[in-house]
Length: 273
Ligand code: CAA
Image (cartoon, rainbow, N blue to C red; front, side, top):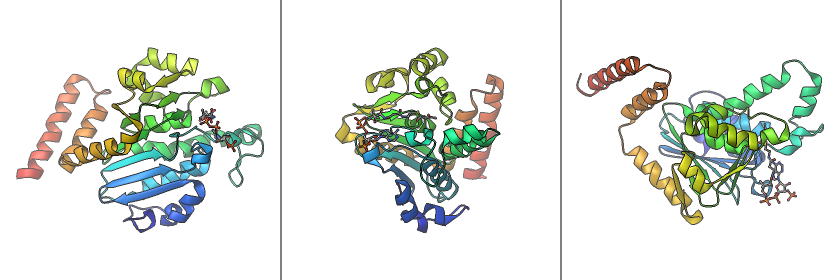
């Protein structure tokens, strides 16, 4: 089912029409309980623009309720080479302006634009879905952060993550710093970001950045298999469990135990009440 025909949660369906997405360099398909978002500008290594992020946000707003798994993938040799570097030129991307001219204007314009961009990433952590980044080749800057915005990362042997922002005089600002620290710890996150070094697939697996590494040709099937495993459990129990897991870090043990009890009472009531 194409995005435009999908059952809507709200928002403007026009914004996620297949034609509009193709102009931006995105594809969006919903097949039953699985939605697939493809960054589709392989000739530019799936570089991302403001339009990419606002379309991602619209996809999130319009995600059909039956969707339980969202796959984020990139067409071609790279997952994503990050922000479209034209956005740092005074001319910017046609029709979308530029960060450098927004910065020159001053005020809160840049912060507003960053917030809007972040909306394209944040919904991927919703409890109602599990998001999987299928990463091959380079995942640089905004590409790395898009992969970090997903719950799981299944990667090809040639995957290469790089948080390039500090090398460019910038900070990672597309929601990636928190999941990075949570996945690898503050010391490794400092090492990865402040050196802007590349983390290859074997290290990514070892330090918890990736759940699985497969041969490049097996990536699609590995993601399909994971989606099938995720769909094999009870939907409402999966949502309640993800809520519990997401809240675990900020709760004390006592609070977490209480949250488990409350969630289980709700499950038992739904099943037998
Ligand atoms: N923006 C715009 N165009 C890009 C691009 C980008 N980020 N990355 C690659 N391209 C374009 C290239 O200009 C080239 O276009 P032409 O064929 O028209 O010359 C095409 O894509 C192919 O690029 P390469 O030949 O370089 O491809 P490669 O496979 O040899 O290398 C790569 C891939 C290592 C990712 C390399 O392209 C690269 O280093 N790209 C730039 C990465 C980068 O600095 N990204 C920004 C990070 S910071 C960020 O995302 C967030 C932030 O600042 C807030």
